[in-house]
Length: 234
Image (cartoon, rainbow, N blue to C red; front, side, top):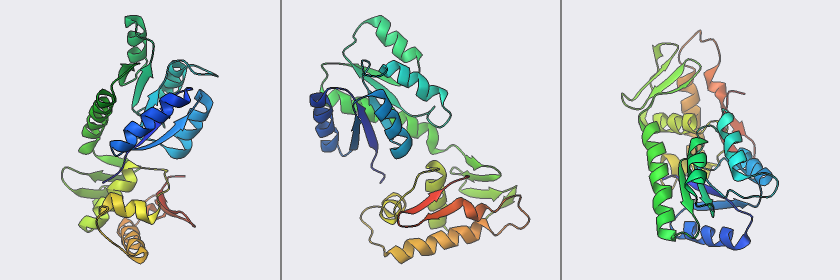
């Protein structure tokens, strides 16, 4: 199962450390930033699944960062929970109107924070669960378990289907073989590295099975030397 990564953005070290421990105990991976600039760099480079964002930050407020993330197509759907000492109704309304997914005020209960995070992630994942995934003329439909290329059906095994779904849901990110194994096969399954490579080759072969396509879809599954694989249209 995919372990969600959560970015903690707060200029107070004590808050960051406390939230990091809370997230770790709940089974999440956490990363942190002390200001808006570092937070944005972390979002672009590490692509967290959710951001816990303080309002008052050095070098630009959290609400300004939230506004920037919502304007950018790459980060427009990134879940954001404001975690702030600003408790007035006007602040909450402003935060929610800027597109943040939830608003938690300090001081807060760790149990409540985890419950809020789980609710937001469940809502986001629920919206995405059965939604067809599409890149150019490549479409994967989770509901019907069908893949098509420029209107032509593509045959592939259940494993390659899960692998393609994982890549389409996480485009432009580089994943190690271990990460791919955990996401597609589960963390309790042991596979040799060569097994991952074999399934990647089979996926590429399936994406090359339709002749005369406008682009070479197999090349979208890219090998990143020394790191793993990514699905990229670049």
